[in-house]
Image (cartoon, rainbow, N blue to C red; front, side):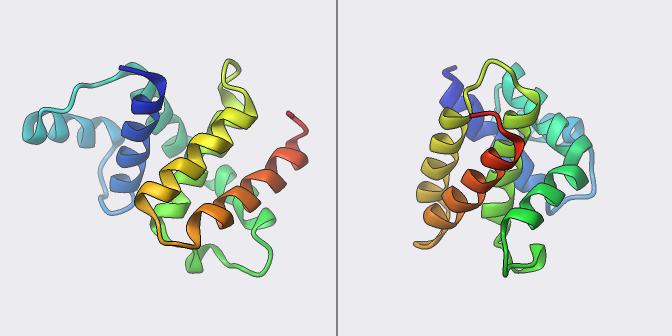
Length: 133
């Protein structure tokens, strides 16, 4: 599985976690049984990491999304941005620019018409704040 596909799988798991009060491992187990999901290690690692660091990630997103409260941001955009911020902070072999670009592509595929530019703006501000560019 390519990294792009693994990242998309991680996004889907993170998004699903937002609706279910189960661990990521339980969600993956259900998905493997129900829809024959292949448990991809990178996707699994990112989904678990986002779940563990969610409050920290949300803090970065909240700070960078001036004028928007977390509650007003779509669940799709939040899941995408949580994944990207997690990669920026905790995955050393993924360049920040790649993470942002992949997040924007996910927003184009799964979000509304305004989501890609919003995601790009917020993630760009976070990238500058964490100075990893």
